[in-house]
Image 1 (cartoon, rainbow over the protein chains, first blue to last red):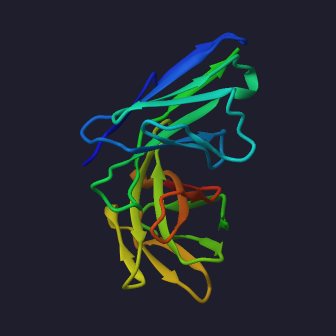
Image 2 (cartoon, chains in turn orange, purple):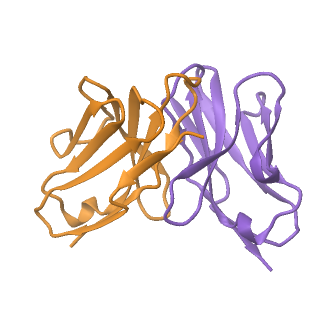
Length: 117
Length: 113
């Protein structure tokens, strides 16, 4: 089956620094990738939809200047958390759509645990 | 817009017992329905999905779910659970033909020996 990877799996950073998280589709070209955020014991909340070669579409309430998304190639999307603060600590999960699969199909990455001190 | 409600935040059961995890949804348009499983510190794995056709859907690991349009429900069942089924389970919907998922709050299934 299709595989999506994320790097790093865990990251700890100091408040005020920026952190980049990578999401890669390993065996297919993903025209669309999604970024989710999951707080402890809570559900996944869609942050943004990333389309290759165009600007990401952010969900209401998500600061686009704080959560920078770049989908520069068909196999890579990056999420940069700028000037991170402790409240940004969360589990970030990406998913990717394979255009050769039905539109309902998303392949999820293993997630990135961000801890901001 | 869609919304999903998972009625139980935690479900403890004994090994080999049957289990049902409940999910109700709200939508003004027709939807696709999904159940995902999440093991600790991991991403989501698709258990099963309903797109159309038979309302009883069978998935991986012996799970099945039944779509009930009149009750707007999509409950997940397994006749006999294993310790390894301990995980968080998420119900999700997307508009028919779409890909934007809306998730429920999740149900923590804990299978005890």
